[in-house]
Image 1 (cartoon, protein in one colour):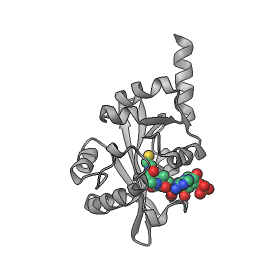
Image 2 (cartoon, helix red, strand yellow):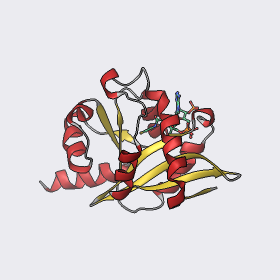
Image 3 (cartoon, helix red, strand yellow):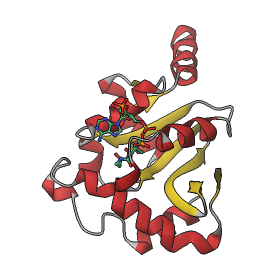
Image 4 (cartoon, helix red, strand yellow):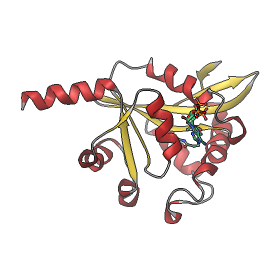
Length: 172
Ligand SMILES: CC(C)(COP(=O)(O)OP(=O)(O)OC[C@H]1O[C@@H](n2cnc3c(N)ncnc32)[C@H](O)[C@@H]1OP(=O)(O)O)[C@@H](O)C(=O)NCCC(=O)NCCS
């Protein structure tokens, strides 16, 4: 069952993020890796800034979480993590598809360039990497992340974003 996480599930969300994020160790640049990957303070800040977490609940146990954040003309998928023991069972895919039903706006997703498995996951769900020369602009417009993270990240977008972009370029 997929449902919105409640306020009293903060500790579980924190635990799932930091367990799922172990996949980054040795993959993302060493200077970007730290443990825990996301501190409680950062998670609190993300929620305060409007990241709405949804969870995949299997018999009362949350196995994966994914956030959605409205950012003006786009919707962002934020912090997608499935427990390391439960990855590649279709949980992330189901969460992603359900979250995509929550907004009519174009969706964007940011991830590490080095997280090739995550890129593969989003591509499998119809997202495409945006042109390289647009990545830093978009990361700076819609995300609040350090410069070093901008340099080491990529952005994927859905069809709606590419269509909107094409219409905008045709008008120029
Ligand atoms: C990325 C993530 C959220 C996907 O959730 P999931 O439940 O594992 O994914 P699903 O089972 O729905 O989909 C699996 C597909 O995703 C891709 N994938 C996910 N994990 C992978 C891995 N470790 N290696 C290779 N491909 C992987 C593959 O395309 C896979 O399809 P396949 O099994 O047929 O090859 C989850 O694997 C995860 O938490 N990973 C670690 C943290 C992370 O990278 N988060 C993304 C932040 S943007």
